[in-house]
Length: 594
Image (cartoon, rainbow, N blue to C red; front, side, top):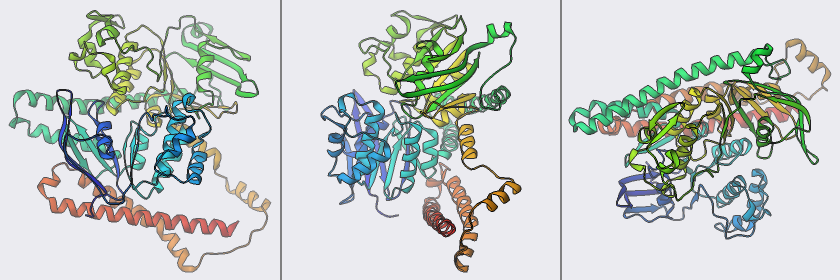
């Protein structure tokens, strides 16, 4: 194995009165694509800063290959010292101005925007432009998709797929991680494990680790044995519950598809009595403008009790405006909206403004008392905290001591204790770890009322909503029964309609004659054979990753582990070459036909 570009050895860091972690080893190779996964508070962000060199270890050594450039994209970039976003971006490690301009243009960053008034999304895109312009050998990404809209996330995915350096990322975005990563780092209970499987295989790997620990639990003391059994049972039970919930969600989506008319307008025929009890919002032909800007035009939507509606679109497309229209905070310019008279709503926004830093957890959840009413049931506040993955010992802790993810979880606990029948979630996944996301999905599934979700997290939408409303920023709203993947599939079908043989023949007859130029015989043979080669490489890489996912393989047979790891790296390199060659030949074919 080649020497790593970046590594830390025997790393230890003291936090408060004890060690956050100790004896950690990490290496980052030239083309590594690493996911760093762990609970909020486990130390993921701190570990990233140790790798970047911005935090000093209490023990251990950090090594960077001479001449290698390591760049960290922080969760909350500090732009306060700069007049404009341009000043901030250009303050990086001597980026070339033309590169910064090009990246800013692709990311949609207004470099002349005053830094003090920039939104979270604008600051994040500016930070990305700065980091990428520095041409790093190792890119460290801390929640890179936070505050980005779907277009920016997809652009970043495409950029990282072409990126020639290595990257290590922390992210709650399952789809982002699954599409990009090839190896996983798991930080848990002060231990760091590595598996040569991408995030797509992470859950299977962790289950295997828990199962192995459970087998060895009889060698440990009783307390630790109980903890390990609880962990193993908890992971397995949650997987089964999630599978059951997804099956239930599919049934709801099937029902919803029957309600959507041929023009994509969500309608449901109900009796007058049913309308009083089942219809939460009924928007008919509504339009909304702000000056010359069209937010919605002739839009209709009926939302019934218990539905989960996902609202997507670019930043500024009008997602928040649509929510305000539905809830009556603002009124449409034309059309009408009927609302159920009994709506009791709660809003969970990404700003966490309802949490006062000087208050304690007990103050926030129980107004300083011991009990909290949840859905008509009285619960002790310590027990309720466990439901949201908190240690009951944090009852007297001040809010200001919690991480961003822990504050988000505490806000969820506070709001879900209030009586309501309408839940509005504005970017609820920001700062949440994957386990808390699982918890949030369970809570949404169990919620008896209606849910409106604004989110850029594609996997989260796939797991929670029954219908997607996609805003394009020009006044058009596309309504699709299902989740994000269903909307994406429809968008592809519209962009690339499948023609019938008769339609294809007519299109060919109507099109002008094109010059017929062919690839060489050897090139055509190569093009014809590449799909099979690519498929075989994908299959072999998957098999190798499954072998490497065995948590005991390295200790049982280190030579075989190294061989399988080397073979997997070689196959990934061949796959990249094959895919690039296929794209080059396809591009040549298209160029000759045009």
